[in-house]
Every structure is written in structure tokens, then in C-alpha cells.
Length: 121
Length: 121
Image 1 (cartoon, rainbow over the protein chains, first blue to last red):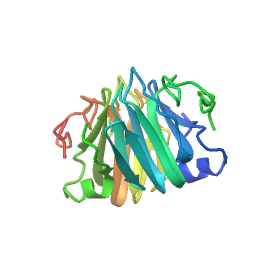
Image 2 (cartoon, one colour):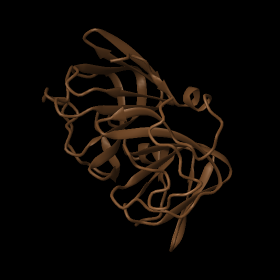
Image 3 (cartoon, each protein chain N blue to C red):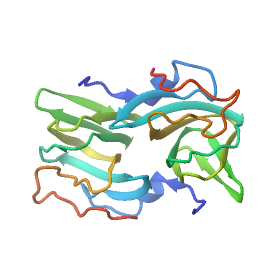
């Protein structure tokens, strides 16, 4: 066991690209990923798993087909499995994602926005 | 789905007792719990699961039989399953725990510090 704290800001300082989640920790088969986001993502869903968003910096909106939720720094939200959603942020925001290993960022909607999976920093 | 952000500080404002984790969210079979801690906890381990500590406010130290790690606000740590540990905080600190539902706070060491499980706020 490496007895070293995992610091969110230090991890975020290691990259600049947006919508490319980076794994910073794993608990059992769940991964903790930091990601920088801005503007609109694509509509997608994860058929087999819930997904957690924790906002570290900034403000984001998560759109659903029947509404939306706004999250600020220090807030979290659980997106239930199978629910279509589209994250959005006017200015760059920094997020901590929690989800099982192997989950693609674009879920059922692969395309230009699909990021390489399981990239550790 | 309740389209409401889960705010850590708002949840923490709802209770004062220490070492009594409160569930604020669930993703699949994993729970997110806030807890206020101060002074020494008991040595214990969780035989069947890793456990995540995320520090929301303050500074904590997690002692292991062969060393320790200090965590400040904005830092996290994964305690591997089966590893004995003892959290400590000189002043009150606020933590976000992530672990499977059903996990007791004292693991294999039940006693006076064992908190009621699955208490939602």
C-alpha cells in the first residue's frame, strides 16, 4: 500500500484536455476519475450502472429529457442507470466521477467524444 | 428521480454527533456517507471491502500498523480490504466515506464506537 494522499488539485494540474476522464484511485472494482468539462457533451446513458458526479470546482448542469439539475462545487448527484443525460458547463468545471471500471464516458453513444478508458494519472 | 443536488455542507449541518456516519446517497450497492470525527477511533479492518476516505473539512491521520497517512481537505485515500487502520483527528474533521452498503464503521471490532448502520439524512 502506497501511504500517500491523493490530492484532487494536484491530479487536475497534470492535464488540460476536456472530457477526458483520468483515473486517480480504485476501490474494489469502482474507479474514481477526475475530468475537466466545458460546453455541451453528448446525450447518452449507462445501461448497467448508476454514475456519481461530484463537483470539485465550478458549476455544471446535467440535462435530462424531462428536466435538469445544477450542481456547484461541494455538491454531488447520482445519475440512475438507464437514464439519458447530457452534462453541460458554461465555463470549465472540474468533476470527480465514481463508476465501475470499464464504463465509457459516452455510454451507449460512441463517437468523437468517446475518451480512452482506464487512463491513470 | 429527485433532481436535487446533494450538498455536503447542508447535510453536515443536520447533525453534531461524531463517529456516526450518515448516508447521503447510494450508487448501485455503494453508499456515500458523511461523518464528523475527532480524537482516536478504534483499530479495525474490513475483511471484504476497500474503503474510501475523502476529506471535506479539516485534517485527519489514518494510522496503520506500519505507518500512517495524513489527509487534508481535498484529498482522498483508499484503505485496502483486510488492512487494520485507526482514523484520528486532533480537531473535528468532516469526511465523505464511500463503501458498500452494510459495512459497519468498526469493521471486525464491534463495541461502544459501533454506529447504527444505514442511517439516511
